[in-house]
Amino acid sequence: MAETATVTKEQVLEALKDVFDPEIPVNVVDLGLVYGCEVEKGVVNIKMTLTFPGCGMGPYIGQQAEWRVAELDGVEDVHVEMVYDPPWSPDLITPEGKALLGLD
Image 1 (cartoon, rainbow, N blue to C red):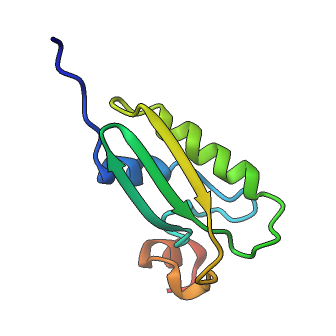
Image 2 (tube, rainbow, N blue to C red):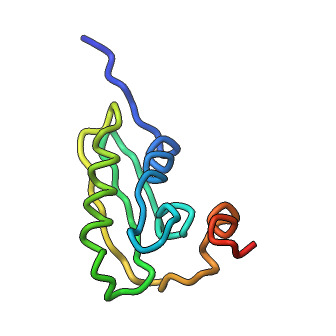
């Protein structure tokens, strides 16, 4: 039996750094939009939010996240759940994201 690749949470988060809110030039990880990521036997469950609940780009961002993670070796399935509690705030932006936005 051939050995299959296993994907890690770190690999998933790194891949999510390729996903951007089209209106903000910072990836979803550094914006603090990813609230959780679990990987078990090739199934990736991601909880993420938007900068505000009514953001019209929500479906687009979620789809981009799903597609990007699905490209990783060892990923069998991806589930992206949008959550709005707790609400996103600029305090969630990483130091790297703040530097990109000129907020440091």
